[in-house]
Image (cartoon, rainbow, N blue to C red; front, side):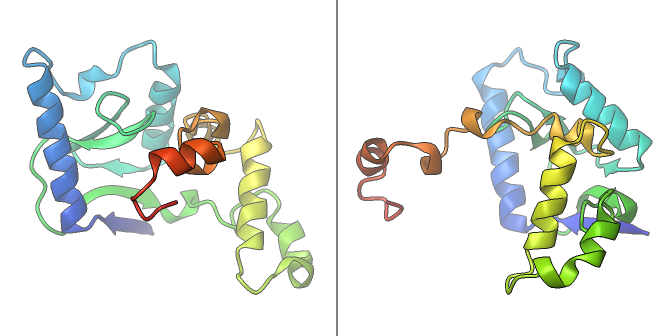
Length: 171
């Protein structure tokens, strides 16, 4: 069984507009799947892994560094219709407490770790797989930036947050 995820029409519009703006910044830039260069081995390994595991990726998008908000992202390379499927993930490749290598332990200890939110088993699964070099999801985790590389307000010092977010309603 395959899970199909459709993105909302507003997100499609934003991605398409971002891609058009990127294309206009450098008229000589050819935005195709060939933008993936050999120096981005982690991305190449991820895309190979995803193909091997049966992930589906529409011809209307690409995964790349160029044009992404941070590190890697999915970028529209042609118009996307409302409700159009952009990628598919096989159910067996979803990371959750039932698919992690420690699923037996989580099941055995479920009464001890199940909090009111229900997030604990998933977070434990994620932490375990993220720290395991043998994780079946290693090619994906290798693309995830270390939290120290993220330039997000939650990692800013208090003075920067107050100064840079003043009047935004976020601080």
